[in-house]
Length: 512
Ligand code: NAD
Image (cartoon, rainbow, N blue to C red; front, side, top):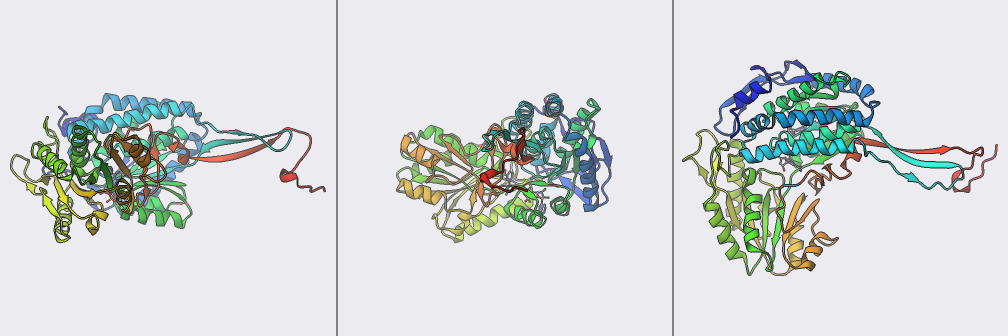
């Protein structure tokens, strides 16, 4: 059982009147429009304060640029020690932070706790990484020369995040950026401001116990799209990492590209799963239901397209619908609830519009109605929908951020892969099969075109150790594990001549 949100805020030392701008532990009220933030659980107002303006974002960026001068020359393992201590704060306050995630994003308790665990895991990963930022030594063609590359801190990093992973995405960026020697300026979703303020409060507590660490390695500006654009436009931020819709990613990428900056984009998905005749059906039903209805269909990796062999389609549809009929839908704070609310009314309207379009395009819709009985009034609760529809229907091409699962049929495995890859997005994918050839084909060069390609497990629920992200309109970025850290550093190729001669490469003679 998670603590009540007011108790969690008190435990984290957050004042009743939160401020929009923070440079380390120094808080300043915003000068912008008033934000009224409401809980998806019951629509109740949870926070009311003025947002940060573009000028205030610039102020935070200036402070981060100042902190970079000291942070870049702090040894990486010492930077790692800061991240280790921050991870300890997260362990101490895991339930408090999860309670705020549930209150603001509407996630059920176990998923909210899992999200905070992801933050802890990435801190652990970053601590180890702080001693492993390896460069290569390369064979030089010139005698008496050493050719090598080293990875150096890049500069302050701007982070724009979405409402549905309100804390983990920032932590993926921040923990890695910090060990790489980069300060972070964070613009969270205006739908989840308190989770961001809570994270910054935990950073401030960590900073208080590490006096040698410059405070401005962590800055927060709670603002709207204009604040996000201020980050994108700033020449002081060599990298902007943006997570959210493809529409937002395009707007950010254009602004960053105009100044020839670097952007790391984690955008929308339209994730598919192929279920083949040899699949374990019990496993199929469980992984489909988790992937399609977890976080009420509001994960970037949520399963949206189920591509089923025609011999199984009716049977699998009935089994999925039977599982859906038993799903506990309701208050995400209650133990036992598996499906919480949509984030707001606009999400509900978007879901209904997609279902109406699906019907117009010949689809047969099961479920998808609003639930009002046995749930808190004021929230938008729905039954998850399954839509039997032709693969060519235009609605299938689009990501609707709600629990809608399109059921598509295939006859031939090659055609199933074609169908799978025939959408503009390329985030997460899965095949359920016990046929080794199908599994390897799906993972290979003529298989799934996504960044995440799974076999016999759900496309949703990635581990932090792998690089996370997707292709095509998903934006091409990779965050979190593996060698994603390289995006947060600059690579310097060094040629060191320790001889008494000055030979030129490629045998060029240039005697003066
Ligand atoms: P959103 O695009 O509405 O907002 C995301 C963030 O971008 C917010 O902080 C918002 O204020 C900011 N923003 C919006 N317009 C902007 C602009 N023009 N310039 C600068 N900043 C701007 O997304 P959302 O509704 O919060 O989240 C849902 C979307 O995020 C879905 O499409 C989902 O797939 C995607 N998402 C992707 C990943 C991933 O890793 N690929 C992870 C989580 C969410």
